[in-house]
Length: 167
Image (cartoon, rainbow, N blue to C red; front, side):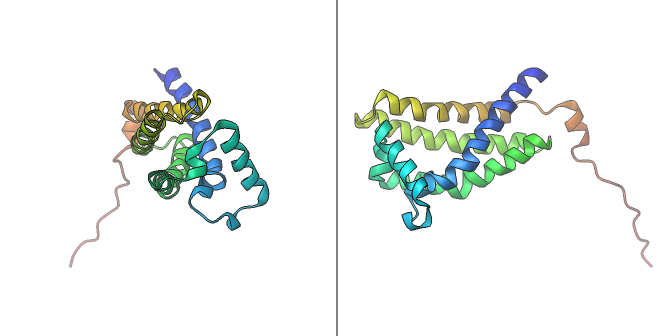
């Protein structure tokens, strides 16, 4: 089980790194003024929207803007916590990973339902968004994995400080 956990952690580490970079540079353009971003990032987003036919990025429906705000204000900081949790082997990583995965799974459910229901999404666009649902599920499963005995033994322990005697 240890090797599988390490493999999942490597996959999630790469995913969290992508989110840590892409969310503020590309996704944030959906809900923030374009004057906040350099021209090359605006051009990159425009190219992506045209190349993949991502009408959500170009049309900016209200629900999608809300999902992007959720990503920026909740999921993005949590991605940094998870990066730290993986790299430092923190015992709370399972919890934050479960929270992150549940949030991504929920928001991707709404996005994928829109893409499938609208009839506007190409197969190419579906191939861009679908893996994020998979990463959400993977994060949930990683969050549900048992904590190792080594980590569990250190949880809840604290140093015993001598108590001051009351007079």
